[in-house]
Length: 366
Ligand SMILES: *Cc1c(COP(=O)(O)O)cnc(C)c1O
Image 1 (tube, helix red, strand yellow):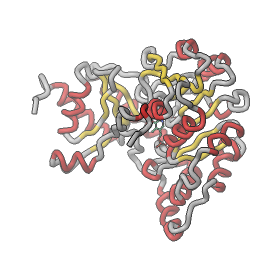
Image 2 (cartoon, rainbow, N blue to C red):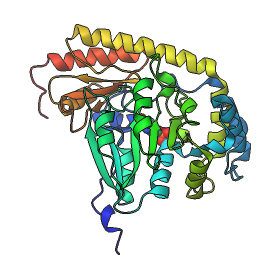
Image 3 (spheres, rainbow, N blue to C red):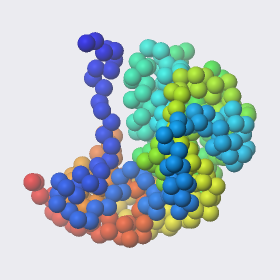
Image 4 (cartoon, helix red, strand yellow):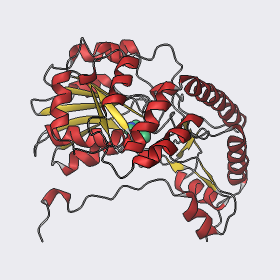
């Protein structure tokens, strides 16, 4: 068999460790997962009802165009229905954009370090990834602009950035968009949009009418608490959304996911309460990091990247043995870990475990 040559050596995505695996492997009863930026409070209680109601219809194919949900979301965002595309998570929208736009040798620009899915999909399409180092954990938009060439198709801006949690402000974004050539697409990944409370953060869907090359990605996986149902969306100009739609599988979001997303969207009071608890959780964790003398990037999503001053991989392993799953800071940030903001009790348990780990002289080698 002969696969595409450029996929042969691609790595397989490494997700956060599932709770069940950790319990079994380490013989632990209590395990806290603060590794995948999931909502510690789950979904709105209305979601459960909506799912139970939809169960009777699971033998029927879903509405491939998600017409009802699209109508609700368009109204909520103040855009037209033909400006929205739903995907199996916003991960799928990322994949569809690369599928629709990239041919071998095209270039695409992103931060180093940022969400790994942009690069993995670009690699699959044979595009060349240009990774521009972050500046103090933030996108260096000027350097990203200087990397634009005639072959550039897409620039990815992750806002807040995963894993660092930093944001690009409205002024910075507008100055950037004003200079990006009109034929280059800018994908603004706002998976954590609903968590942000900083007043300099852009209201990006308002910019869509001015910048036809802008596509905004959001998801129901994070604050809405529907990660397992796999539903996210892209918003852009109708012409761009149409192109992305042309490469979409006909039934890419399920009935259950659409029904759940519809009621989750309507329950903005629940979203507001999660945003508030998260903001309190950030303050709680930052106060503890300050007490422990640890520095961290300013956090705007539901996760914090903190410098633990020793190999992050070692701290990851040691925390795992104490039943707390987090993530390491990746190659460029070897002495960092990324922790999801949990409930108040989960945050306490994490800090307790972290303090123990950091007070040990050296992590014992198993
Ligand atoms: C979680 C996440 C997504 C997508 O999640 P889906 O579950 O596929 O919607 C996209 N971008 C970033 C930066 C994320 O952290």
